[in-house]
Image 1 (tube, rainbow, N blue to C red):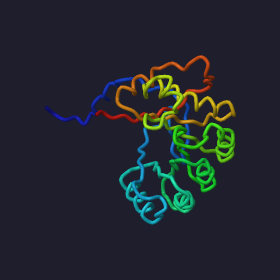
Image 2: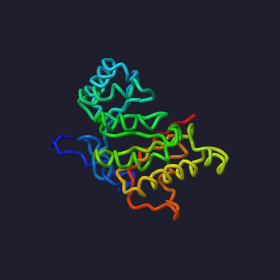
Image 3: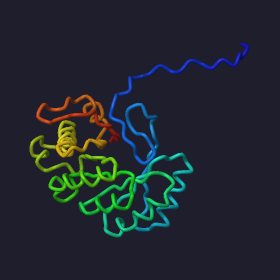
Image 4: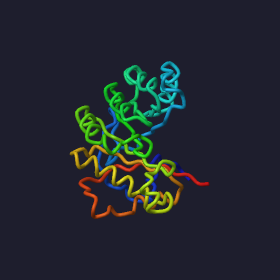
Amino acid sequence: MVDLGIPSAPLPTLHPRRKTKQLKVGNVGVGSDSPVSVQSMCTTLTADVNATLQQIAELTASGCQIVRVAVPSQDDADALAQIAKKSQIPVIADIHFQPKYIFAAIDAGCAAVRVNPGNIKQFDDKVKEVAKAAGDAGIPIRIGVNAGSLDPRLLAKYGKATPEALAESALWEASLFEEHGFSNIKISVIQQVMVTDRILRMPSPDKIPVTSFWTIHVLSWQN
């Protein structure tokens, strides 16, 4: 058979891409018609600035476009400004435990902040302040929900971390931000594989005001 150099036909689309709100994480578009971006997370102690920047450089060289760093302590929060300034790709601060780290990350110039309401003290009471700070800085908030730190009220309602419980948690937290005029939101969900289909198909409850199609980032695994 003679090769005429004609390109082969593209593979058929397995499933149409879900239309969502487009966000900007630094200079990288996320959601809507943006190309799928490559994101990873550092395994270093964020407070170790040199080690963290070295790992970010290695990830960048491997094609990573967005990087996330954990912020469970004040030392980690204090290191963010230097890391965000020197990183060649946008840095997302993954906040744990204390709301004050959210504001530190925004002030440090991080491209986005990831919050897990289930493991941050009195998070719902701080949503108004967080929404204003992120809105003033023009950065998105990633709301992370996972089975290991689900709100006790939802565990009591559903008996365990069911897909419906995770969906309700994510939608509830997003609605709190939208009550304060903030819709620059991405939702991430971590659970076993069975959650994936349900979280994407579950309709928003009528009682939750949904004014945009949020970008959804789903992480799943099998036992």
